[in-house]
Amino acid sequence: MSTFQDLGLNDDLLQAITDLGFIKPSEVQEKAIPILLGSEGDLVALAQTGTGKTAAFGFPMLEKIDANSRTTQGLILSPTRELCLQIANEMKQYGKYCKGLNVVAIYGGSSITDQAREVKRGAQIIVATPGRMKDMISRRLVDISKIQYSVLDEADEMLNMGFKEDITDILSHTPEDKSTWLFSATMPREVAAIAKNFMSNPQEITVGNKNESTSNVSHEYYLVNARDRYQALKRLSDANPDIFSVVFCRTKRDTQKVAEQLIEDGYSAGALHGDLSQNQRDLVMKSFRNKQIQTLVATDVAARGIDVDNITHVINYQLPDEIETYTHRSGRTGRAGKTGVSMVIVSKSEVRKIKSIERIIKRQFEKKDIPDGAEICEVQLMSLANKIHNTEVNHEIDKHLSNINTLFEDTDKDELIKKFFSVEFTRFYNYYEKAKNLNVSYDGSRDSGGDSGGRSDSTRYFINVGGKDGFDWMKLKDFLKEQLQLGRDDVFKVEVKDSFSFFNTENELKEKVLAFFTDFKHEGRFVNVEVSENRGGGRRNDRKRGRRRDDRKGGGRRDDRRSGSGNRSERRRSEGTSKPRHSDSGNSNAFKPRRSRR
Ligand code: ADP
Ligand code: MG
Image (tube, rainbow, N blue to C red; front, side):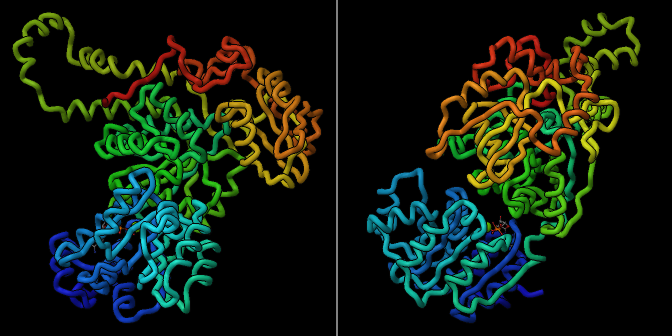
């Protein structure tokens, strides 16, 4: 095992490294630094998040640039503002003894003139997001025509976020003979293509297996009906009282809704997505870092900058479109030597994706059951007991003790404990007393005595758009939800054929759906929706099975009836069917189990 001295770094850097408390180089640093110091060639480095990639390119870049010159010599491109700032800060710390060094961060959502002024003072190193960088180049506010080193950090994410053209454009303003260092956690085809097109004979280093997930993280999945996703999320949270989690959704809209609903239901949650202002995002992140927010609901893009170390759980509320993204999500936990759990809530139609993810991360998922009400109550009760046991006594109470003692004169210890605990516990108990089993087996039925995926209170539609029009089932579902302003699970059983598709909604939405599509054009052509007469082929069986097993009619009590979040059909009736529902909640009589902390 080598030291930083062995790697050949200069004294200024070694001093900074000592100040930072880095004792030995991480694997990616050990592999990359000697290559980058020893040659002027290109490099592709694959390593998961949290492995110290910033220093792996940062130290060599600082070593190589001339801090006495005011020319911009190094350019680091990174996908988000947060990462950009993080990298710039790290670089400043690493280079704090390099006299004359000026590292400038360039990113959107902040004054371009201020950034231009900083660059003008002479920035040897610029750390930038592609969008703002391109903007500044076109306004001639930066000059990168003399750079010698360019870094594409988190290359996979930049491509995922659609920055390919911007990157191409930016690099076209740089010299041919510069060195390019590409760092990425995963190696999808697009990244390989970038390496091929923009780099010459790059050396390649890999830390761990490509795309592999860290061994500190265990992976679990939970199979439920799509419409029970939210209930499943709540149970997973309730079954882990000290959870500190990031919940990933696929769209900004779902992210916002899930967060709002959690807050409504008494959880300390917050949303992080691109529709929030920078200021709002900063506030949310601040609360999350301070643990004022226990559950951060985020989109993949917005979560890229999260560098919070103690996240206990990552919950995939929905799986990402690109399965490679899963590695990034699960990498949010299990950092800094801690262990973490990455949970996936899947519906039957997505369960095959679990196998594909296993192949990518080279790790096995464990199929687990959503805990039932009794389990959750027990966990909550014992967590409360532990909390009380560990609570420091507040002696302000002493002076009231005799009054309290008088009140409980005739209550023995067991009775007192029971009463005391009931204050908190009864809320959970009432909520979960009649909780149904949310787990489904692979054939789509409830594991025991519940209802199935099919519902006789749902309507199946035919729609004349399909794969040809660029839809897959997820895109079509998002499209319908967006157009009709529907909630997360209001559109289900989406099945996309080549030139047409099918989908379901609850019967209550039928009028609204049909009315909406009477005169609707998408990309210049009329979109036609009709009620399907079981034209969905293989779906016929589903429907029959659904009808037989359906036990929801007749008002059997379900746990979510009381939560103010579940009782969909009743609430919708009272609201009328045409009004878009922005939140499922709002039933003031609804009982909500509030978290005992905060
Ligand atoms: P990555 O870019 O691979 O996700 P970072 O470069 O952001 O990882 O590093 C993750 C964390 O580890 C940072 O807080 C960084 O300061 C710290 N770190 C980096 N290298 C070392 C090291 N050799 N020893 C200790 N901590 C390190
Ligand atoms: Mg990084």
